[in-house]
Image 1 (spheres, rainbow, N blue to C red):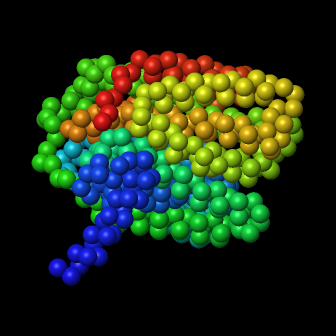
Image 2 (image 1 turned 180 degrees about the vertical axis):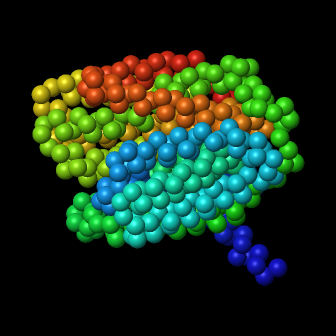
Image 3 (image 1 turned 180 degrees about the horizontal axis):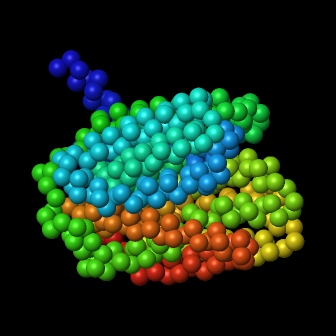
Length: 433
C-alpha cells in the first residue's frame, strides 16, 4: 500500500515521456506500453553503441592488422559477421516459435554477444599473429550466431509490447542515441584525446561487451504476454519455406530488400573512390566515420516516424534517394580528382548513409507489421536467411570493382536501388490504427 503513491507518478511520467517521444496521446497507450517502449529504446541503444565499437569493417580489421594477423582472416571478418547473423535464422525460427516469451531469446542472444566481445578484448590484448586472428574470427562467429537468435526474436517482442504506429519511433530513437555516442567516440579519437592504440580499442571492446550484458538484463524486464509456446504447425522444413511460395507480398518484400542491399554494400566502394586523388584512405577514415554516424543521428528518428506512417512509402523514398545519391557519387568519382579529398568523401558517405538508414527503417518495420504473431518469427528468419545468401553472392561486386572500377559499380548500384524502389511500390500498404 505504501508503494502506490510512488509507483503511480513514475508510471504516469513514463507514459508522458513515451507519448511525447512517439508523438502520441498518453491516453492511447496500452497498459505497460510506455515502460516497455523505454526499455526497448534503452536496450537497443546499448546494443547499437556496442555494435559501433566492435565494427568489423574498421575496429576489428585495424586491430588484427596491428597484431599481424593474415590478410585472409581480416578479409573474412565482414562475411562471417554479416552472413553469420542471417543464415542461421531459418534454423532458429522454429525454436523461437516454441518459446512462450521471446524476450528471453533476445536477452540470451545479447548476453552471448557480450561474452564473445569480452573474449575478443582479451584476445587482442594477449595474443599475436595468426593465433589472434583465428581466435577473434571464432569468437566473432559465436557473436554472429547469437545475433541471429536475437534478430529472429526481436520483431515478435516488439510487436507484442509496443502498438503499431509507434514501433518505428522506438528503433529510430535508439538509432539516434547510439549514433550520438559513436560520433562522440570517433570525435575524441579524431582530436587525439583517445590514441589509436591496441589497449584503447581493447578497452572500447570491453565497454561494448558490458553494454551487451546490460541490455540483455534490462530486456528481461519487459512486460511481454506469454503464448502457448507452440509452433503454428509441425510440417518440418517445408513449413518454413511455404510462405515464400504462397505469400505474394513476402515475395515482393524479399525482392525489394534484395535489390536494396546495395545501399549496405556501397560504403567500401566509396572508400575506394576517396583515394583517387592520391591520399591514403586511412587518412580520411576519421571524417568518413564521423559523417556516417552524423547521418544516422539526423535521419534515424525521422525515417522511423515516416515508417510509422507508411513503411512501404519509406522504402520507396529511400530507394529512390539512394539511386540519385549513388549515381551522383559514381559520376563524380569518374573524374580525375575522384571525390575531392576528405570533405568530399565525407559528404558522399553522409548522403549514402542517410539513404541506407531509410531502407533499414522501412524494411524492418514493414516486415514487423505485415506478418501475424504466429508467423512473424518465421517470416523474419526466411527473409533474413535469403538476404544472407544474397550478401554472400554480393562478394562478386568486389571483382567487378577491380575489373571496371568502383565508380562504374556505384552507378550499377544506383540502378539496382531504383529497381528496389519500384518493387517496393508494389507492396500493399499495412493497415495502421
